Image (tube, rainbow, N blue to C red; front, top):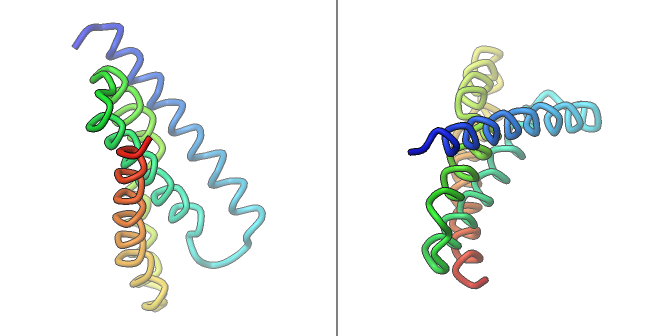
Length: 125
């Protein structure tokens, strides 16, 4: 891995993290609910885009540098497993078991479905 690629992945990761912060803030301000809606949207859309990048890589030979920049860098900074885990535990501690179950299991199912859809779409394009 070249130093330029490492720098590009780092910059893309920073842009992904900033995108996550901005989108989560916008969603929190528009949807004032007690459920971590922003994290769900972010992880599901990130899974969709990662599936798309992977599908493009497999079907059309997307260069490995772009896979690293987009997948590892941007989407690695954009998506957040740790926040989703924390929010699931927090919901359970508040005895909001249905919300905790949907946040943990439901988000996983939605993210896997979104990744599969992206993978399929990437193969079609």
